[in-house]
Image 1 (cartoon, rainbow, N blue to C red):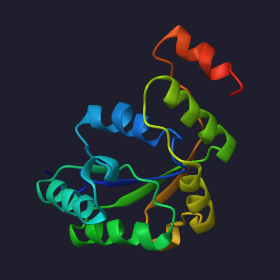
Image 2: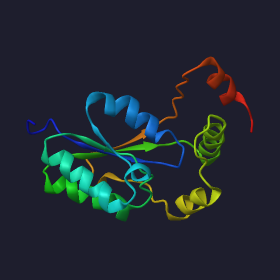
Image 3: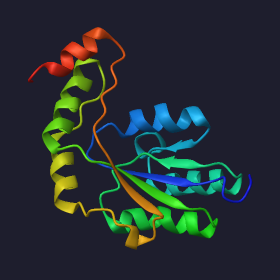
Image 4: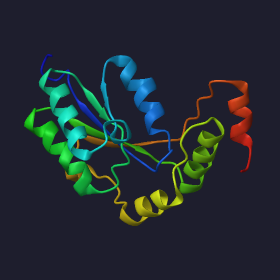
Length: 159
């Protein structure tokens, strides 16, 4: 790919805060390689997938919770090695909203994330900052997208 045409997008946010939806809907559809630990299994495989994508001139979106500067730095180093800019999209939803979305995910037959995952994220979380080496850090407001009227109705439930 052309210099400047390729980038790394690092998503940051609570479990079930909309990261995968954003990665699939806004990035995978535009040819970005979606890198997700739930799918790939280990952090090392995620880093390898980013290296492979960037070495072929393809942009990638890192669809993990990425709560700490240390965790984000691993991906940032890969971007820097490939001389590609990296930016953060920070899903700025509150914990109670993310937990609500998690319950809705369960209703649709998806895997529910255990409460401990929220506690661990909360304990370790560090606000992402440009000073870490990112070209930008953008807070993403929660923007619900409903596939069906039933989904819209369910979202209004207080579970």
